[in-house]
Amino acid sequence: MKKPANYTTLNKQEKREIREYYIKAQNNLCYWCNEDLNKPAPKRITDKKIDLTLFPENFLQYPIHLQHNHKTGMTEGAVHSYCNAVMWQYYAL
Image 1 (cartoon, rainbow, N blue to C red):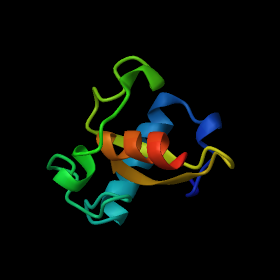
Image 2: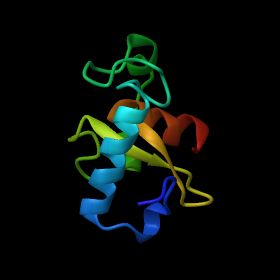
Image 3: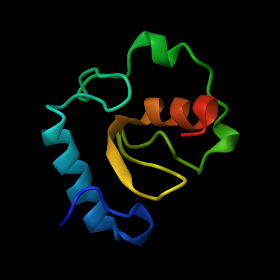
């Protein structure tokens, strides 16, 4: 599958495959904070308060998300779930 891909057209399996691709391509580093995806997001990120009412139910359930641009729909990389929340809430990304 070609990367980046249009997130809005992907099924669950395709999203999983692309997320795994990005994890490897990024050397297991978060696209947003550049820290190890096997560890929790760093304190400089988790110190930001998240309003969970802004997000879908169980948004933080899975530790690694596939980030996509909300304007173009195109995938950008793999991120910590908390980094994804910060990107969305604080930067509208």
